[in-house]
Amino acid sequence: MRKVFRGVLSLAMLTGVVSATGASAEAATTAEPTALQSAVDSGTSTDIKDRILAIPGMSLIEEKPYAGYRYFVLEYTQPIDHRHPSQGTFQQRITLLHKDTSRPTVFYTSGYNVSTNPSRSEPTQIVDGNQVSLEYRFFTPSRPEPADWSKLDIWQAASDQHRVFTALKQIYTENWLATGGSKGGMTATYFERFYPRDMDGVVAYVAPNDVVNKEDSAYDRFFENVGTQECRDRLNGVQREALIRREPLEKQYQEYAAENGYTFDTVGSLDKAYEAVVMDYVWAFWQYSLLSDCDTIPADATHATDQAIWDSIDEISGFSAYADQGLERYTPYYYQAGTQLGSPDIKQPWLGNLSRYGYQPPRTFVPRSIPMKFQPSAMRDVDTWVKQNAHQMLYVYGENDPWGAERFRLGAGARDSYVMTVAGGNHGSKVAGLDADDKATATAAILRWAGVAPAAVQEDPTKAKALAKFDARLDKQDVKNERRLRP
Image (cartoon, rainbow, N blue to C red; front, side, top):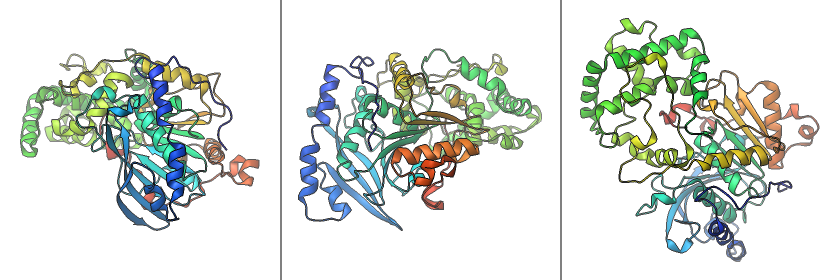
């Protein structure tokens, strides 16, 4: 059943996101259900593909077979501006892992591109349900042409989700959960904040929450204490050597760039790109690796070869990251980080005066032709809302993940909501990695919110477990598949 308690959605939202115009836009985007239901129900076919394609604006790119499911790659026509739908549209990619309309549905967002290969998020496995996955607006090919970057904000993206949900809810009538990891967890949170009556629960993994962009001391405290002193010394030593040996290693970088056709117009120079990669090194290690991986870091950096330093930096940070070719795909992320989401700025005192540019801001990584202006009220608004109104929301963090240093926290207004931490976990932390008690509590909550908790679990949450068996192809998640300093 739908959520009974919901916080009142204030009309006084963050600047440029919701206004009287925004309220009318929500009405405009939700005015379709009657006509939509008629279109969906008017056909005589009962095939799920026909029912989906009866939705106005929905089209099929391809169907891929997968045992036990139907899997569709789709496009959906969306307004460029949900406040002014008449001002043009674009095509947004969606994938749909269909199991059965009698099962709950999980709405998954990565906050980036959508994969067109079948996969299943952890909540989808837990509830044995359907999964709708949405590509974030402005990540190609889901980008309006020409691109008006002012239409890339968290409210517009949440409105994309709301409109997709409104369309598919006519077919998938059981409970819905929103989920995503990292920027996807942020996205699921923003969707809940702006459309709190859509979902029956939210499961957000490792979601950063940079409430005050100019105050990042929490990250500095994190790096002073994470892991062990031995591991921190190894990482700091390699990073220092990479800056001390800038001249020979940048010569190698020039050769590497020439071999691969890399250019550095956006950041401005190879030197700035090189330092940006090196400055990411310690953060990236803790984001993607475990304490047990410290053995792979050179123990005596000062006596290591140039190649050993290069290899360690490249393996963990990736020397292609800040070339134009590496940045292009992620322009929408850096734009959002520099306009609403915020970004970390850490001191790294062990580097002394070796850094020439410091921790470079998002503006460095976005072409100068795209204007950017930061909106400090955006994250404050979301943070306040979560503290006062969170209902049936679960946040999972990794103890050793830097992004968790600034996380979502619950306030007095939260109901049936949780923040849990995986001991020693990194940016790939899941419910499965929680200790036994938290894992049972979290799993039982997810089943309950989805409306599929067995009677035994309702009586005793410690009996909670995933309803679907693990599938190595569908459920395998690789935390290193997005190896950059991004959430």
